[in-house]
Length: 276
Image (cartoon, helix red, strand yellow):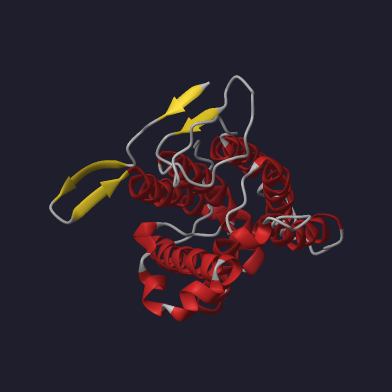
Protein backbone atom coordinates (compact mmCIF):
# COMPACT_ATOMS: atom_id res chain seq x y z
CA UNK A 1 0.00 0.00 0.00
CA UNK A 2 1.05 3.60 -0.54
CA UNK A 3 0.91 6.04 2.37
CA UNK A 4 0.02 9.42 0.85
CA UNK A 5 1.14 12.06 3.33
CA UNK A 6 2.02 14.97 1.05
CA UNK A 7 1.32 18.42 2.45
CA UNK A 8 -1.00 20.20 -0.03
CA UNK A 9 0.73 23.48 0.79
CA UNK A 10 4.08 24.08 -0.93
CA UNK A 11 4.97 27.12 1.18
CA UNK A 12 3.36 30.16 2.74
CA UNK A 13 4.31 33.82 3.06
CA UNK A 14 2.24 35.32 5.85
CA UNK A 15 -1.43 35.00 4.86
CA UNK A 16 -0.46 33.90 1.32
CA UNK A 17 -0.47 30.15 0.82
CA UNK A 18 0.91 28.50 -2.32
CA UNK A 19 -0.67 25.09 -2.86
CA UNK A 20 -0.06 22.33 -5.38
CA UNK A 21 -3.68 22.56 -6.52
CA UNK A 22 -3.38 26.24 -7.42
CA UNK A 23 -0.07 25.74 -9.21
CA UNK A 24 -1.40 22.80 -11.24
CA UNK A 25 -4.57 24.74 -12.07
CA UNK A 26 -2.42 27.59 -13.40
CA UNK A 27 -0.22 25.15 -15.34
CA UNK A 28 -3.38 23.71 -16.95
CA UNK A 29 -4.29 27.13 -18.36
CA UNK A 30 -0.74 27.93 -19.47
CA UNK A 31 -0.40 24.57 -21.25
CA UNK A 32 -3.80 25.08 -22.86
CA UNK A 33 -2.79 28.54 -24.06
CA UNK A 34 0.39 27.13 -25.61
CA UNK A 35 -1.50 24.39 -27.46
CA UNK A 36 -4.17 26.78 -28.73
CA UNK A 37 -1.42 29.17 -29.84
CA UNK A 38 -0.03 26.38 -32.03
CA UNK A 39 -3.50 25.59 -33.41
CA UNK A 40 -4.41 29.21 -34.14
CA UNK A 41 -1.05 29.83 -35.82
CA UNK A 42 -1.44 26.63 -37.82
CA UNK A 43 -4.83 27.79 -39.13
CA UNK A 44 -4.07 31.45 -39.68
CA UNK A 45 -6.06 32.88 -36.77
CA UNK A 46 -4.96 36.06 -35.03
CA UNK A 47 -3.25 36.37 -31.65
CA UNK A 48 -5.96 38.82 -30.55
CA UNK A 49 -8.58 36.13 -31.12
CA UNK A 50 -6.56 33.73 -28.99
CA UNK A 51 -6.27 36.23 -26.16
CA UNK A 52 -10.03 36.79 -26.22
CA UNK A 53 -10.68 33.05 -26.15
CA UNK A 54 -8.31 32.60 -23.22
CA UNK A 55 -10.21 35.16 -21.13
CA UNK A 56 -13.60 33.69 -22.01
CA UNK A 57 -12.33 30.19 -21.16
CA UNK A 58 -10.76 31.23 -17.86
CA UNK A 59 -13.85 32.88 -16.46
CA UNK A 60 -16.21 30.27 -17.93
CA UNK A 61 -14.23 27.40 -16.38
CA UNK A 62 -13.79 28.89 -12.91
CA UNK A 63 -17.32 30.29 -12.57
CA UNK A 64 -18.95 27.20 -14.09
CA UNK A 65 -16.94 24.76 -11.96
CA UNK A 66 -17.70 26.66 -8.76
CA UNK A 67 -21.41 27.14 -9.43
CA UNK A 68 -21.65 23.51 -10.52
CA UNK A 69 -20.34 22.35 -7.16
CA UNK A 70 -22.63 24.77 -5.31
CA UNK A 71 -25.80 23.81 -7.19
CA UNK A 72 -25.22 20.10 -7.81
CA UNK A 73 -23.66 19.00 -4.53
CA UNK A 74 -24.47 21.32 -1.63
CA UNK A 75 -27.00 24.03 -2.60
CA UNK A 76 -28.63 24.39 0.84
CA UNK A 77 -25.35 25.07 2.62
CA UNK A 78 -24.04 27.58 0.07
CA UNK A 79 -27.30 29.40 -0.56
CA UNK A 80 -27.75 29.87 3.19
CA UNK A 81 -24.16 31.21 3.37
CA UNK A 82 -23.67 33.01 0.01
CA UNK A 83 -20.23 34.40 0.88
CA UNK A 84 -18.88 30.83 1.04
CA UNK A 85 -19.47 30.57 -2.70
CA UNK A 86 -16.50 32.92 -3.18
CA UNK A 87 -14.13 30.76 -1.10
CA UNK A 88 -12.77 28.86 -4.10
CA UNK A 89 -9.38 28.36 -2.41
CA UNK A 90 -11.04 25.98 0.07
CA UNK A 91 -11.92 23.56 -2.75
CA UNK A 92 -15.21 22.65 -4.34
CA UNK A 93 -15.08 22.69 -8.15
CA UNK A 94 -17.30 20.40 -10.24
CA UNK A 95 -16.11 19.19 -13.65
CA UNK A 96 -19.70 19.02 -14.95
CA UNK A 97 -20.20 22.66 -13.96
CA UNK A 98 -16.92 23.51 -15.69
CA UNK A 99 -18.20 21.78 -18.85
CA UNK A 100 -21.35 23.90 -18.84
CA UNK A 101 -19.34 27.05 -18.14
CA UNK A 102 -16.98 26.30 -21.02
CA UNK A 103 -19.87 25.75 -23.43
CA UNK A 104 -21.40 29.07 -22.39
CA UNK A 105 -18.06 30.88 -22.68
CA UNK A 106 -17.43 29.55 -26.19
CA UNK A 107 -20.96 30.49 -27.27
CA UNK A 108 -20.39 34.11 -26.23
CA UNK A 109 -16.93 34.10 -27.80
CA UNK A 110 -18.39 32.93 -31.13
CA UNK A 111 -21.00 35.69 -31.01
CA UNK A 112 -18.12 38.15 -31.11
CA UNK A 113 -16.02 36.19 -33.64
CA UNK A 114 -18.43 35.27 -36.41
CA UNK A 115 -15.74 33.65 -38.57
CA UNK A 116 -15.34 30.85 -36.01
CA UNK A 117 -18.30 28.54 -35.50
CA UNK A 118 -19.28 27.06 -32.16
CA UNK A 119 -18.26 23.51 -33.10
CA UNK A 120 -15.06 24.71 -34.81
CA UNK A 121 -13.88 26.19 -31.52
CA UNK A 122 -15.07 23.21 -29.47
CA UNK A 123 -13.17 20.76 -31.67
CA UNK A 124 -9.98 22.57 -30.76
CA UNK A 125 -10.57 23.71 -27.21
CA UNK A 126 -11.44 20.24 -25.88
CA UNK A 127 -7.89 19.13 -26.72
CA UNK A 128 -6.64 21.55 -24.07
CA UNK A 129 -9.50 20.71 -21.70
CA UNK A 130 -8.44 17.05 -21.67
CA UNK A 131 -4.90 17.99 -20.66
CA UNK A 132 -6.19 20.54 -18.17
CA UNK A 133 -8.40 17.90 -16.58
CA UNK A 134 -5.31 15.78 -15.98
CA UNK A 135 -3.57 18.62 -14.11
CA UNK A 136 -6.67 19.43 -12.04
CA UNK A 137 -7.10 15.82 -10.92
CA UNK A 138 -3.43 15.72 -9.92
CA UNK A 139 -4.21 18.80 -7.84
CA UNK A 140 -7.04 16.86 -6.18
CA UNK A 141 -4.54 14.09 -5.43
CA UNK A 142 -2.23 16.55 -3.65
CA UNK A 143 -5.25 17.84 -1.72
CA UNK A 144 -6.20 14.27 -0.71
CA UNK A 145 -9.74 14.93 -1.94
CA UNK A 146 -12.18 13.12 -4.26
CA UNK A 147 -10.76 9.85 -2.93
CA UNK A 148 -11.87 6.37 -3.89
CA UNK A 149 -13.59 3.58 -2.02
CA UNK A 150 -11.79 1.17 0.31
CA UNK A 151 -9.66 -1.46 -1.44
CA UNK A 152 -7.02 -4.15 -0.95
CA UNK A 153 -5.26 -3.60 -4.28
CA UNK A 154 -1.44 -3.21 -4.08
CA UNK A 155 -1.59 0.40 -5.29
CA UNK A 156 -4.20 1.50 -2.76
CA UNK A 157 -3.49 4.90 -1.18
CA UNK A 158 -3.79 5.64 2.54
CA UNK A 159 -4.78 9.33 2.48
CA UNK A 160 -3.33 10.54 5.77
CA UNK A 161 -4.31 14.17 5.10
CA UNK A 162 -7.89 13.45 4.04
CA UNK A 163 -10.75 14.97 6.00
CA UNK A 164 -11.22 12.99 8.17
CA UNK A 165 -7.77 11.29 8.05
CA UNK A 166 -7.76 7.77 6.62
CA UNK A 167 -6.00 4.72 8.04
CA UNK A 168 -7.14 2.19 5.42
CA UNK A 169 -6.18 2.10 1.72
CA UNK A 170 -8.52 3.50 -0.89
CA UNK A 171 -8.61 3.62 -4.69
CA UNK A 172 -6.63 6.64 -5.96
CA UNK A 173 -9.63 7.75 -8.03
CA UNK A 174 -8.02 11.11 -8.80
CA UNK A 175 -5.05 9.34 -10.36
CA UNK A 176 -7.33 7.09 -12.44
CA UNK A 177 -9.05 10.16 -13.86
CA UNK A 178 -5.79 12.04 -14.43
CA UNK A 179 -4.33 9.16 -16.44
CA UNK A 180 -7.52 8.66 -18.47
CA UNK A 181 -7.59 12.38 -19.35
CA UNK A 182 -3.90 12.29 -20.35
CA UNK A 183 -4.59 9.40 -22.73
CA UNK A 184 -7.56 11.33 -24.15
CA UNK A 185 -5.34 14.36 -24.75
CA UNK A 186 -2.87 12.35 -26.86
CA UNK A 187 -5.73 10.73 -28.80
CA UNK A 188 -7.32 14.10 -29.61
CA UNK A 189 -4.12 15.93 -30.54
CA UNK A 190 -3.21 13.00 -32.80
CA UNK A 191 -6.59 13.15 -34.55
CA UNK A 192 -6.32 16.91 -34.98
CA UNK A 193 -2.86 16.80 -36.54
CA UNK A 194 -3.90 14.13 -39.06
CA UNK A 195 -7.46 15.12 -39.93
CA UNK A 196 -8.11 18.81 -39.23
CA UNK A 197 -8.33 19.74 -42.92
CA UNK A 198 -11.13 17.33 -43.81
CA UNK A 199 -12.91 16.33 -40.61
CA UNK A 200 -16.52 17.33 -40.09
CA UNK A 201 -17.44 19.86 -37.46
CA UNK A 202 -17.90 18.31 -34.04
CA UNK A 203 -15.84 15.18 -34.77
CA UNK A 204 -13.22 15.76 -32.07
CA UNK A 205 -15.80 17.22 -29.69
CA UNK A 206 -17.99 14.12 -30.03
CA UNK A 207 -15.09 11.78 -29.29
CA UNK A 208 -14.14 13.95 -26.31
CA UNK A 209 -17.62 13.82 -24.79
CA UNK A 210 -18.04 10.07 -25.20
CA UNK A 211 -14.58 9.15 -23.92
CA UNK A 212 -14.29 11.62 -21.04
CA UNK A 213 -17.74 11.17 -19.54
CA UNK A 214 -17.75 7.40 -20.04
CA UNK A 215 -14.43 7.30 -18.16
CA UNK A 216 -15.91 9.55 -15.49
CA UNK A 217 -19.04 7.36 -15.27
CA UNK A 218 -16.99 4.18 -14.78
CA UNK A 219 -14.50 5.66 -12.31
CA UNK A 220 -17.40 6.87 -10.15
CA UNK A 221 -17.99 3.21 -9.20
CA UNK A 222 -14.72 3.23 -7.24
CA UNK A 223 -15.03 6.83 -6.03
CA UNK A 224 -16.31 7.70 -2.58
CA UNK A 225 -19.47 9.80 -2.39
CA UNK A 226 -18.81 13.54 -2.27
CA UNK A 227 -21.98 14.39 -0.37
CA UNK A 228 -24.07 12.43 2.15
CA UNK A 229 -27.22 12.48 -0.01
CA UNK A 230 -25.47 10.21 -2.55
CA UNK A 231 -25.22 7.32 -0.09
CA UNK A 232 -28.59 5.81 -0.98
CA UNK A 233 -28.52 6.58 -4.71
CA UNK A 234 -28.14 3.79 -7.28
CA UNK A 235 -26.02 6.08 -9.42
CA UNK A 236 -23.88 8.85 -7.95
CA UNK A 237 -24.50 12.45 -8.92
CA UNK A 238 -21.38 12.47 -11.11
CA UNK A 239 -22.74 9.49 -13.08
CA UNK A 240 -26.18 11.03 -13.53
CA UNK A 241 -24.63 14.26 -14.80
CA UNK A 242 -22.36 12.33 -17.19
CA UNK A 243 -25.17 10.61 -19.10
CA UNK A 244 -26.46 13.70 -21.00
CA UNK A 245 -22.92 14.54 -22.13
CA UNK A 246 -22.35 10.99 -23.39
CA UNK A 247 -25.64 11.07 -25.34
CA UNK A 248 -24.73 14.48 -26.79
CA UNK A 249 -21.37 13.08 -27.92
CA UNK A 250 -23.07 10.11 -29.62
CA UNK A 251 -25.48 12.43 -31.42
CA UNK A 252 -22.74 14.76 -32.66
CA UNK A 253 -20.42 11.95 -33.74
CA UNK A 254 -22.94 9.65 -35.44
CA UNK A 255 -25.99 11.73 -36.35
CA UNK A 256 -24.80 15.30 -36.90
CA UNK A 257 -24.23 15.48 -40.66
CA UNK A 258 -22.78 18.92 -41.32
CA UNK A 259 -19.33 18.83 -42.92
CA UNK A 260 -16.77 21.55 -43.34
CA UNK A 261 -13.93 21.76 -45.84
CA UNK A 262 -10.46 23.12 -45.19
CA UNK A 263 -11.18 26.37 -46.98
CA UNK A 264 -13.80 27.22 -44.36
CA UNK A 265 -11.33 26.76 -41.54
CA UNK A 266 -8.74 29.09 -43.04
CA UNK A 267 -7.45 30.25 -46.39
CA UNK A 268 -4.76 28.06 -47.88
CA UNK A 269 -2.24 30.85 -47.97
CA UNK A 270 -2.32 31.08 -44.17
CA UNK A 271 -2.04 27.37 -43.48
CA UNK A 272 1.20 26.42 -41.81
CA UNK A 273 1.94 22.81 -41.11
CA UNK A 274 3.93 23.26 -37.93
CA UNK A 275 4.88 20.36 -35.73
CA UNK A 276 3.62 20.52 -32.18
